Length: 397
Image: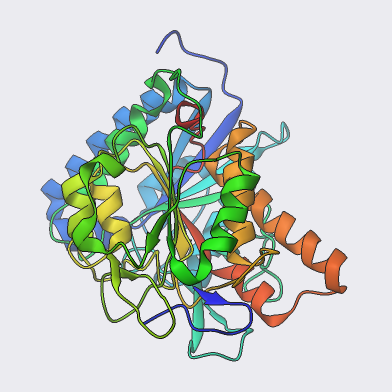
């Protein structure tokens, strides 16, 4: 993440009536090319289990493989001949309208696969920084035909994605699908949200991080880097923690997150820390630059994939250089984190919570300065949800 002053931050029971629809989008050809027909069958078997699990919490699953005529025949939609963000959105927009129908049942979108299966949109970067473009899923949740940065700042349809990293086997995908299938069966816990939260921050941002934590009612001590580093991360940090908030640096060249004090940037957290110590069943929000980077990566080279592989069902992060406050009042990425967690506390689904967090950021920026500046716009575009957007993780609070 970057400070808004432009300091760099990189170096269950009976079947319920269906009251929501989850439209799952993927590519048969690309999944088959990556995993073979046997791997594709394994994924499809997991999706059957997923559909059953969703129905237990009132969600109907509709699967649309955008390049497969058989998959789309029931909806009367023609398959795409070539996978591009625009062609996928075109089919998806028609499908959304058809599955919603006259009843206008709420629809959320889940993209199955990473950038190499269903690509992110590459949007014009509104901010004058080192990123040539912003990878974003916002257009998939925006109104039909909206595919530019300016038209996709505030999508109204919740969107999530289950990435598959470098494609070495379908296990990462099927693991996420099977975890999401069981999400409605988690017990409600007795501890308070404060007792189950972890905040890990760069020293230079600990005042801003404390502001976010305090706004959520989390009163526990912050983990701060430095003096802490990845070498001092312990299993006890994660035990019983279901709400994980990271305000650290990230990089597109290295798989770690970093702290900062003055001009020193020690390594704060590594993928191995996550795979060794994280016990899953947690909600993760990171403000790190490139915190959600996953394309072509593995659990050893992507923090996001490391969390997903160890059982995190809900991960929110940025695809590129991100911004936030050096000190209070909090701004940009800080507001995404604050209002995402706050919306979950109110019982919203993960997808709706991210939609709401963006809306709060925009409203606060406009009320405070009269407009959305470049950093605000980029923040609205860059944060993605990795996980099922219909997940309602009340068990985490």
